[in-house]
Each structure stands twice: as C-alpha cells, then as structure tokens.
Image 1 (tube, rainbow, N blue to C red):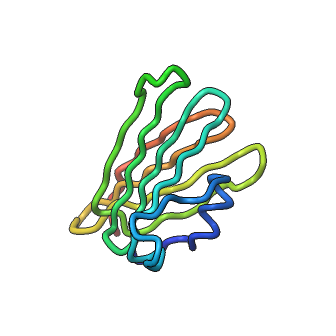
Image 2: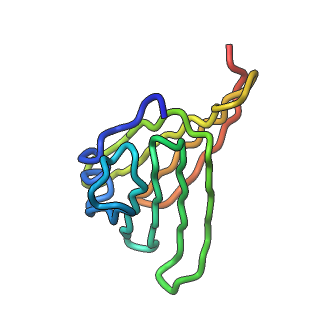
Length: 122
C-alpha cells in the first residue's frame, strides 16, 4: 500500500489488539487480524499493507455472515472517523487499474454501512 495508517492507529480505531501471523514481523510486512464488535455486529478485519491486502467479514451476533469482501489491490487506507461514537475508514482500490478507482467507505460504528463508488481516474 502506498499510504496506510500505522498499527497504533488501527488499534485505536478498532479498540483491540491485532493477532499477527508472525508476532516478530513488522506490521507493514505481516498479516494482522482485528476482531471487534459494535452493538449488533462482529467484525473480522485482515490487513497486510505490504501485499495490498484487506478483507472484512461481518456477522450478526447470532453468527450469520451478512457481509464479506476481500481485496488484493488496495493502494490507500484512510481513517475517516475515530471517535467513541463513530468509526469509519475509506479504501482506495486501484492497483493495476488504468482508468477507474474504486473507493469504498466502511462505517463500523454506530451502525455498519458500506458505500462503494467507482470513479474515473483523472
């Protein structure tokens, strides 16, 4: 990823410590998994900045999967909101693309929401 928040930023955002694939490896070169909840959903975020990889699995509290996405072409992640009441990120998915960028906004709190836009890259 060209631009990605630091591990401490994600710890603050998700309010949990990551489980790392290799605990001795630097955050940028490792795969980190964050598992957390809001009032109605359980989230599992896998993130590997060096490999441009991001996945999100969302289940309701009865363990029914309601959303899943996996991307291997994320070039940038922005934290939009990181407050007690609101948590959200924005993904830029445009690695290996010539004309368009997909922008995905994910709100975790207060309520889970996803907005996906594909825009012309000028």
